[in-house]
Length: 367
Image 1 (cartoon, helix red, strand yellow):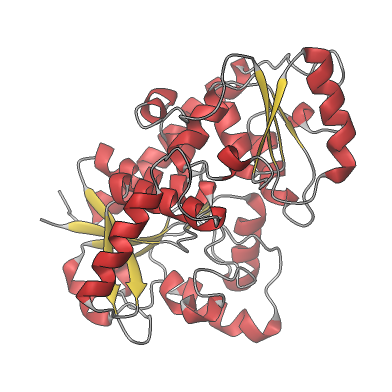
Image 2 (tube, helix red, strand yellow):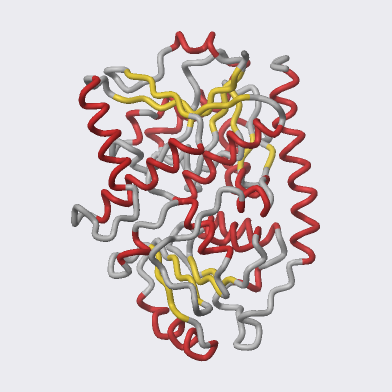
């Protein structure tokens, strides 16, 4: 059977990364094509592998009392369990942690598609982007098999020390698509090519698709309506205003990514979907939290996050929801969001995305 190989930056405990990885594989599955994620690991003994697998399975369960105090590890185990269950993944063991050229003949096409996959400032799984940098540009594959899918830079300029490599790597792609306007502009500036701007893969799947894998967290009280708060940066400046909103709207306040909220800190990706879907209001600086708020048509407020605003700006502009920025939301509009226009736009964007992945499939004669 002909297959598509997916290369991702593979940030194991990042909601957007895991859910986007799932969405890329599911996108091709909807077109009748099997796609799997390729991941490099250092060779380990069979006994160590079994031990790692058993421990991760054990600590991923919602036990009455967690057996270890390391909530970060428990969180990792739950993400690992989600990945094993929902994302087709092939582990390739290599000493140098690079994908071997011999796998080129095992796949009909390859796709580079992941949040910030071309951001050399992103540490990645091994703390150093350079370890996998060539793989993120599919240099192990034939040039006619190299495709990007809604790829993201996460940066607006390429430093001189990386520029020559980026130009060479990008020029070798057969098809180029990116997620943000700034990314398309950067590619045009670097190599003079026009990259198609597509939606994030998570948006190609419908609310129904996502609810099929949604999971209700077992040890969280959902008896009261709640405000879901998910920040990837320090949000102390907004703390009082968020508390005031929660009080005025009579909402319980739930915080993700905050170790003081023990049960929420270990939320898995499928539970993350449930929490977004059932929230009354979402306050966030996360791109993918905003994406899922739009998908589930949930009132949300977006807050600034350092130099990561461009991708959220593109998202809000694309779906005519710029008024959901914190600086523009009024007291009267907190829970009043008109998603009619964004719903129509999403239909068109999904068709563009579908045509793009169909072009990858048809030109290689996978089917």
